[in-house]
Every structure is written in C-alpha cells, then in structure tokens.
Amino acid sequence: EGIIDNKNYPFGKDKIQIKFPESIKIGLTQEEVLAIEQLELDPSSKEWHTRNVWLLSFYLAGIRVADVLEMKWKDVQDGRLRYQMNKNQKVVSLKIPDKVLTILSYYEPYKSLNDGHVFPELKGVDEKDSKAVLAVIRNANKTLNKYLKRIAKLAKINKNITMHISRHTFGNISGDKISVQMLQKLYRHSSITTTVNYQANFISKDVDDALDAVIDF
Image (cartoon, rainbow, N blue to C red; front, side, top):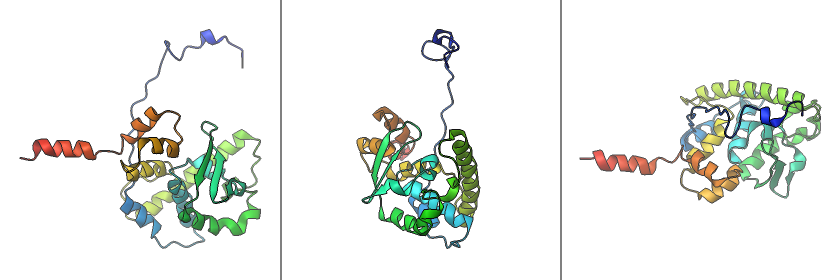
C-alpha cells in the first residue's frame, strides 16, 4: 500500500528466503479413475455432484478448484472452454472432451438458476466481493474433499483423494506419453522448467528399469 519503502521489505532475492520442504505428489492410476467413473451413485446425492466436479477437473488436465467453481456457461462456446485462470490471470482455451460434455449436460437444465455458473456453489455470491468469493470457494473445497473421502471408500481406493489430486492424477496417467512442451500448454505453466520438475514426480519408469538392471542377478 506504499506505507513502507520496498528496500525495507525483508524477504526476496538476496534477502530472507523461506524454503519449503518438497511435497509428495501422488496421483490416482487409470484403474482407480475408472473405479470412480463406474460407481453407481444417486444423482441427488452429494457424492454424485462431487464426482462430477472432480472428474471435470481431471478431464481438463487438472484445472484448479477455483477455476472449476467459477466456470460459467458463457465460457463454453463452440466446443471449447475459454476462461481466465485465477492463479496467474492467463487466458486458457481448451477443447471440451465428450466426457466433459456429458457432465455439463447434467447441469444445463439449471443454467438459469446458478447465476450463470455451471456448478451451484457460487450461486448468490457477489462476484465483485473477492473476499466473499474466496471464502465460499474455500468452504466448498473442504466440503468436496469430505465427500471425495466417501467416494474413495466406495471405490475401494486407499489414497487420500482431494480436489487437487485431480491435477496429480492427470500428471500420473500422462506420465511420459505426452511431450513436455504439450504438457506445459495443458498445465498452463509459464516455464517449461516448472513442467519438467512437476512431471518428474510421476515419471519413474526409467529409474525403475535402471534399478532392476543393477540388482537383477
């Protein structure tokens, strides 16, 4: 706010830097995603809605929960999703896969009831009130994660499934099937180095083969 001169700010380059420990990123396997897809859930249940939100995020390369919940019908045009990312304000354009179109069809009858949003979480929230929007998204994320735990139990998946795990799951299943340049575009990373470091969490075949080559005697 301009109250204090920037030179007095103690953090940043050549100043105090806080180093966070590297987090362990674990995604679901293709078989586990199929198990979630194939669950028979009551369409009126919270679990059914939660599965739709999670799968839509996964099908679109793991878009973040805030971007999913703020998605509007006007963002869906000509078979593409166009939206502005919350994290870095980048404009994104993605083809809408058939599986996403199926999920959208479930919510289309309620198009006029959710203030233009695809999903109902932000219904009635003033979009100009950023604090209110953030609070609702945080609470919705907690609720979705609660029901994802129930979904994991029903699907017999022994992993902690959260909304953010959809992003890790895309990374895990994509593995080394897609070029790092294409993954950079799908992840919307500014730097390809970020993509390489991120994807290193999920590509282990070469390391596994190297280990076997040494101890297989």
